[in-house]
Length: 530
Image (tube, one colour):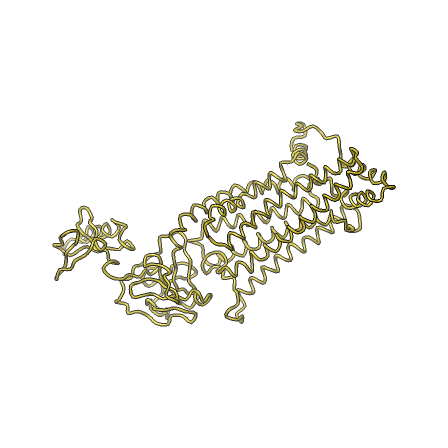
């Protein structure tokens, strides 16, 4: 009957030979024929004898020589095991009843599918997923530039013949969602992988550090009634959407290689919606500041009714515009009757994000850039108006007018910091994305890490203020006084500005300025005291 486990040592030996030396391409090797011998670093083996250069063989201690299979002949990697294919982004065994064309190595693939195939005995097929960290998928049916060809030596080229990847840097597989069409999964360029992986670690750590600070900012403004005014509610919406965006990005970082396609697409829409919403609420805050100092007539009603009406209008604008862009994005992805050159989002094709630069520009960076540009214009105009008010107020040359000027400076500096944190960093982010990696990687890494730490910076700007900390102190621990109580109350401030207005009736220039300040800023000034 023989020894039932006699094959086990041989199998283990072959496995050891296969994985003993990673320098063999694709980690695939086979035992060299018996009686193989070396002459001047050339291995002679087989019947009849054949010479094998150093690249084609390896010496394994205790085993002898092994030949690198993919140096002897061309290899092509199949991403999944034999008789398996990608179903819902996972390698899934195929049933015998499934009427699916067998796997063949294509010579050329375009939007219509596989044009022609190689003879199967030309290649040694290696099975298993790629070991590289960052990958992307070539989908010719979604993007014309993704057309690819496989050479007789196993190299992956684009339609024009330029090299995309060498044999060990890509794999081929059938995908169920595209009627089991064969596509290529490619490792990202090696020179960027280590940099990208290291940068992604820092980005993820930065976002994880930001989350508790964003949550703390939201909690502080939610707990303290005095902070839940128009400015506070707008900030809470901005912080909440930014928290959702960061959480989704962190999840994407951890599950990109294992998430099913449906979840990948859901996360992509979540990231897009939450980031766009955060920028629309930033735009709301900049607009409200600009409106206040532009001297326009406020809405009718008392302060609470006025702020309630404005918040409803701002909410319709911020949530409505974000939802509209998301619906357009979804429609462009799902609507089947679009032209072939229409810019589709491409969520889930190459990653849990947009599938092309044009889609990223149209559905994400374009709206963000427009909002940032409008914020910049409003900020410049607001700065001009504040300087004008400051010059007009200097005519009074009194302590009362100086207090008013100081309050304007405080509010201006508050939004200057916010603009720097949220505006300048993201402008640099857009420039970084548009310019690619043309020698300025370090600068872009700095700005990207700054963006990931926005939660910390927002907490420092909006919570670490004397007034906010004092209110928090009174709310949580009233018996302990963190700061000395200020002698200048909100009512004193409002009455001071009113008296200032009445004391300069005979001075036309100052009267115009003071009335403008009194009408437009008195109702909101107390919200921004340091």
